[in-house]
Amino acid sequence: MDLLAKLKKTNLTGRGGAGFPVWRKWEAVKEAPGKTKYLVINGSEGEPGIKKDFHILKNFLEDFFYGLDLAVNFFSIKRAFFYLNPSYYALLEKDLRRRQPAYLEIVKKPKDAGYIGGEETAVLNALENKKIEPRLRPPFPTVSGLFACPTLVHNIETLYQIALLAKDEYRQEKFYTINGDCLWTGVYSKPENWTIKQVLIETDNYPDFPFFVQVGGDASGLVLNMDQLKQAVGGAGSITVYSQSKHAPLDLIRGWIDFFARQSCGQCTPCREGTYRLQKIFSERTPDWALAGEILSALADTSFCALGRSVPIPIRSYINNVLKRSDASLWPDFPMAAAQDLCACF
Image 1 (cartoon, helix red, strand yellow):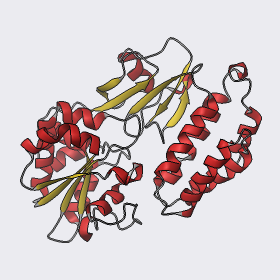
Image 2 (cartoon, helix red, strand yellow; image 1 turned 180 degrees about the vertical axis):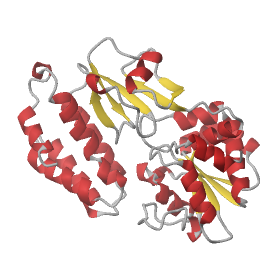
Image 3 (cartoon, rainbow, N blue to C red; image 1 turned 135 degrees about the horizontal axis):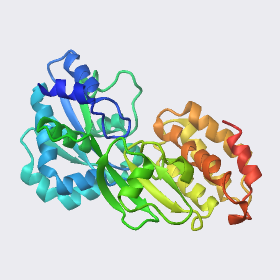
Image 4 (cartoon, one colour; image 1 turned 180 degrees about the horizontal axis):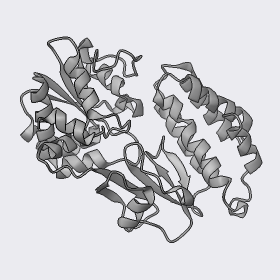
């Protein structure tokens, strides 16, 4: 069975967060017209709370490069680009250079590229020395990507899993990064269909105190309470545990907003102005929750890329799933009724 057939049979999905079937991306690049095609490895890993790609490069470098070789050979690609998180580059450069094939160019992600610098099309702009901001899609990179040529963009873990698949060692597992108020933080390979609760229990990280979690990333991830853990881990596989008694609600909300405001590329007005206004609102002693809700609704509906559309996710899910269902005596000074005005805007 050839590699594409194996990809179809297992329905391996990309590990960058979107979960798109790998075989569909391969078929799109294969069928795209044009003699020149490129492969780009997105090693940005800029979402807070996710460390799986570094774990793979540190512990499974040969498998990663084997997966890369397989993809390059399948498409007869002459040039590939490895766009890498600068801190990872500093720590792993010697090992990467030792194994670097002639067709591969390793590019250190600019330090000022920020979170948005890991968005798929922003990576392509960075490699073309253009302004690091997302592109309008369609066309998709599989049709018109790097230098307007068909381009296969893969995450580090995706290539690692492709290597296992080719060696008949693929076990339908994925990497989970576990952080926060738990005993054994770290990166674990476990079945991809496990629930959040299963992952926490089997890694001995299920707390014995009231808690909630954020899954899929510490910035854009969904916040869930203890009764909502019978679902799979979305996004890029992170679980961050929060002790319910340790974290003040406004501090968490301000932290999420500050992150997105710092990381906005400024390309679109809703995200640029919206995150700035949210920062101002929540710097006040008494935030205007209703106005914040209107801004978050506009961000969700009109932002150009996923960064702006992600801003409401942790805030709204935290209020609805955790604060509304918790004992109000935990946070006696928190204006729950006003916070519910925010959620009413969606």
